[in-house]
Image (cartoon, rainbow, N blue to C red; front, side, top):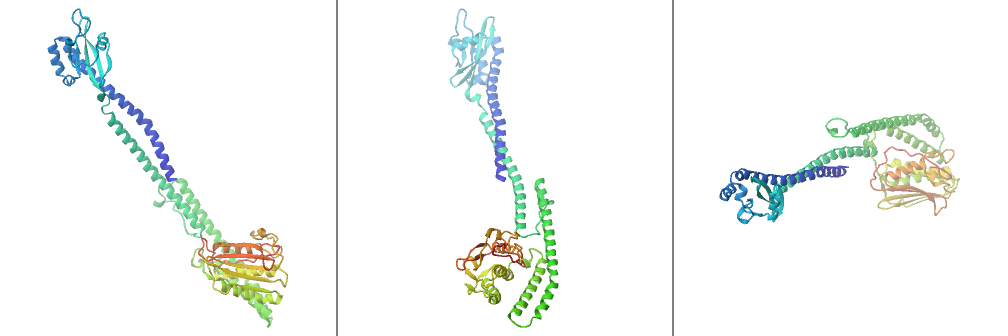
Length: 467
């Protein structure tokens, strides 16, 4: 925008300057020409009284010498022919003559002439010296006299035009700088809001807002109102999530008491472990939703993906053995750091493995493969079930295509966690087991947007199913 304004100012000012300065320069040139011939007419008129008094050549020669043009050899007097003569002879010419006898004869008929002579022009003015006798006064006007001062005038006019263009450019640049600065502040604030900085506001009054156009100040005020509304809505959403999570405490307490009375055994121990984990997750949701966005608690904490995967696969292996499911874990021996909180990654694995147990028949085998590279950690969760009927529908948030027990949110939340690290989520068919396969790719470097700590991932469903 800044350079557009500068170019527009240069074009507009140049056209205006040319529209005024070119005619003005031509007027100056014409004025200089007229001034030279007017001066020549004054020189001719100065000899009129002398010719009216005498036609003596000596007296006229002294009169010519007393004038500036006569002293410079630019003035001549052509006396009328002698009695009986028809043409002016050389003896009857006083001063330096340049006009031709023909031109002198034409002027003697009573006409003021301007004729071209070598090096300039000759101004011929007739003067009556006696009845029926007319002398002709000739004044030489050099070409330099016709353009004297014109070059200087053109130079001054050109400098004025350049000065006007420079002033217009400076004004347009300063105006554009204010406009661009205000627009960039607005764009920067929008980017900051998109990255989670909800405390940033734009100045609409005071020194920082001075120079900004009224429209951009209105946009800044609208942005501030929008940011305030976003903060209010997020606060209300966090409070609602915390309140809803808090309501789960009562049924969780009942489940914990019932699980404690189940006695011994692997199934009872697994049930108590699941209830305890569920209670921890609910507590974590309550704490996370009451944190201030953008605070220290919201910063992403990395973890060892291999360690988290081993722990969660070990947890689900107990249930797999009870249901007669064969399972495999490959590639989780070496450390693999990812910029994801361990709780979020554990919830992601629970969502993916929970889909296997929920949406495949008892006894269906599954596998978890981990591949770590310099830039990403890839987790493949496959099974020997029927696979996905519609992978694109399974990734649509809240689609609810999976039937009873499916919220349609699980895989979408897993995808967003992957994208927050610079990775992605893909659905396909397992090349080894022949069923569904989910490929989760987590970036190992800092991503543009970090997944907020405390986000808990819901469980979706797989099979003919939505996430």
